[in-house]
Image 1 (cartoon, one colour):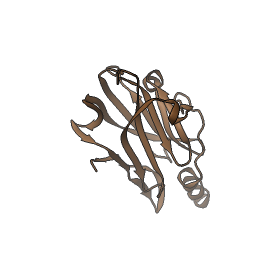
Image 2 (cartoon, rainbow, N blue to C red):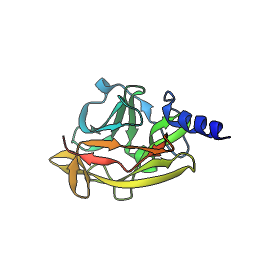
Image 3 (tube, rainbow, N blue to C red):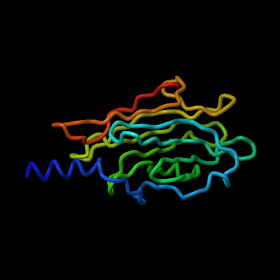
Length: 178
């Protein structure tokens, strides 16, 4: 039983990533960066749970500079686009072997003109299936930027959560400016 448990947990976070639609999350539509118009870089995302994998979260802007959606890209998934309606429902950013790891959701005050509050929901414990959340804000300050507690950041790191030497989830994201 202990061996099965260890294999199950290791498999949850160390297997090749498989991106699939999840309910109630949306993995976004494949999109081509060249067809999007203006894209503004927002945040580079990494985790020691998947060393060497780098994700990028960018704002897709319309002709007025308003946010019409978000572009999420990473080495394994190519470019994925989420419209503002998708983000308000909940966007699935990372899925590993059918296990939803990170979601992004716009809260009620969010709009493409001013931005607003966003909630990151991340798998804290894959054994129990528990998630935790962290609130961030997308704000227009000339250019668009992301903030945590009114402090701008452009890198987000999800430290892996380990129990008995096995990765079982991720801890609260760490935010910094680089």
